[in-house]
Image (cartoon, rainbow, N blue to C red; front, side, top):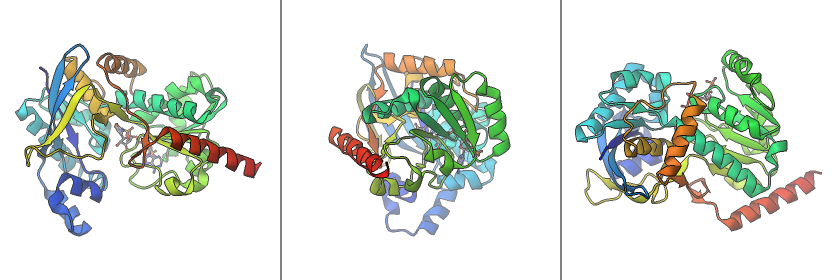
Length: 369
Ligand SMILES: NC(=O)c1ccc[n+]([C@@H]2O[C@H](COP(=O)([O-])OP(=O)(O)OC[C@H]3O[C@@H](n4cnc5c(N)ncnc54)[C@H](OP(=O)(O)O)[C@@H]3O)[C@@H](O)[C@H]2O)c1
């Protein structure tokens, strides 16, 4: 059996307590200071993954315990060292391929340097995240009755590893796509490089609010540690697919915009009867805030590579090839991985909730007509 490890890190102070219940009640500055110096550690043993044709894998979540802001602000080599130490722990436990979770795959050059220094092949998992994210966006559009062919779509983080490929996959299915990022030079250059081959109208801007105000469909994949999508900017009935970790969509949207459908786009249901057992308290279940039996798409990519015995640096850096996205998407489907049920703001989205969202969107459109 080929085994994997996956590097995780807390996305927020609430997450720190989930990882380490002992941190409860401690002040944020103390927690942040401890995180700065805490060595990497084996967090959970992942078992029970089994394909419909009986192939199995198991692996470990290994913690590189830095918060997103620390990943961006601490000296690069110190962050790399922490991530590499986590991979080494996974390799010592028996992992033959490693995945990079959230900011561990964003920091620096998107996994390239880490892969060069790692004892085992590394993937960011971004190819399957792209496939799952685009699928989730259009599932949301169908649920909300959005006519995608005549829709304006916005990709926030369009020059990134995930966002750039999402632009190309979304473009054939909409009327116009708007590319958004902060660095204008890089954004314009990227837009110029792809606009000819995009089969729909396209434009680019650094003004997120202005772009979102035009959008029927929004996909966000930024490396921001702050909210990026605010309730005031969203159109009635808009669909927002959120891939960023930590999230980009302000929690105010959940309260103030009952007419908008937000979906977490990167979650997948894993085949078999997956369990996450805490390493330090054997028998205890590790809680990452995801429904049982589901995993992030980037984790799922790492699991699929192990199931396929493909110990290779499948996805690294920016400029991901669409062929890779299609390949891992097909392998994941063949191995029994599916999009997880819709969810947002840590809660499942029921059929009734969608009906209510559609009704609220109709009302809001009627009120503004
Ligand atoms: N759900 C999953 O399974 C999963 C898997 C992997 C990664 N992720 C998450 O996906 C996100 C993107 O990852 P990536 O590897 O594509 O990152 P990346 O390559 O670093 O790209 C980030 C993009 O976001 C833009 N950006 C950063 N801050 C922004 C802001 N405040 N406003 C607007 N745009 C901003 C960047 O361009 P500028 O700097 O020019 O703005 C760039 O286009 C991360 O949050 C990561 O944790 C999720």
